Length: 137
Image 1 (cartoon, rainbow, N blue to C red):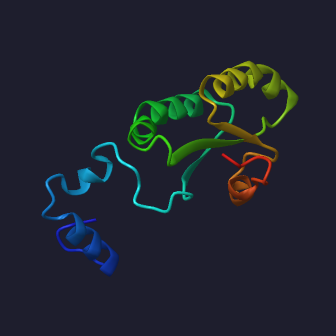
Image 2 (image 1 turned 135 degrees about the horizontal axis):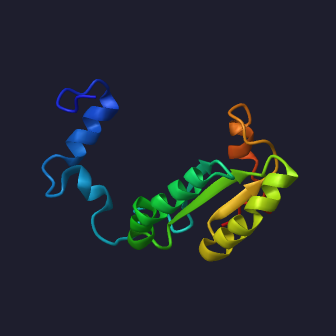
């Protein structure tokens, strides 16, 4: 998308609100500060992820090292990032991946494993399956 000629009113407002500032769009994460929100408002960034592959494990590690770390440093009390995984598809995969998943949960405390198949059709269910007991962060 060409940002020099915005196509929507929202894009125009975003450009106007950041143009003329010293940092421009990069200022969105510039400096450690509280979000300008009511004190009881928090942001949950829910990242859906595949459960049991080396690639998905590496992707979660990359997110933790990059923008998740930046958000945690800038907004430690206001922003929580959680990875939502579906359960392993069968007992053989569970047996193979359970130690890695348990280690990830213990090391980072940002991984939630939900019941249900890890399929594209199940993505909305995976995303919104949080009940009150699971998702109070």
